[in-house]
Amino acid sequence: MYHIASWRLRLVYILVVAVTILPFGISNTGWVAATIGGRSSALAALPLVGPLVLLALGVYRIWLVLRSSETLNSYRTAGAASVLRVLGLVALHVGAIVGVINFAARPMMRMLVSQPSDSGIEFYVVGVLVGLISGVGPFGIILFEFSRLLAFESEARGADA
Image 1 (cartoon, rainbow, N blue to C red):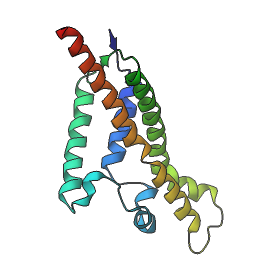
Image 2: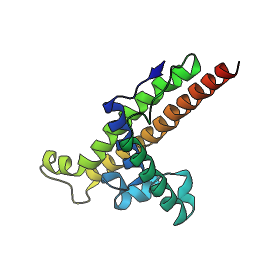
Image 3: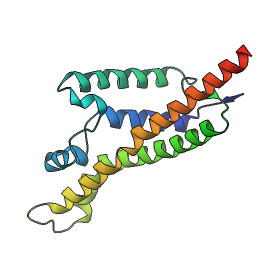
Image 4: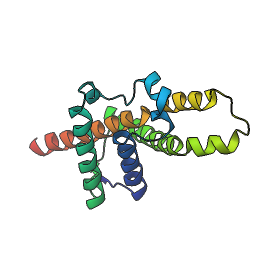
């Protein structure tokens, strides 16, 4: 019994991984990036190696998901793993929405704000808010993948028993 990954899940997963590894959008510009610390990542502590490793791993994971429709499949979960899977899926979808907003925020702000202030504070505030919320997507990947790991381990224990 499998959880079959839908095309929507694959698309959301790819979008969240892409948003995580590629610094783009309003939350990665100028003072906004300086305020929230640039790209927040565990590997970003290393000046150049960390982001390059994260980029390589992200591109590889996107390639795996695109190559095979079964990459994100997992065994049925129960208990804590089921809760983690649901929370991970919700966070993945929120992260994908935030990624699209991050990309489209600057043009939307230019369209909605008829008279921007001299300092551009409205762009700064929106960028900081989007940047702070953007951590939901990678957290969703972690929860989703951890639930898959628990499901595979549970299935392996069941096969051994």
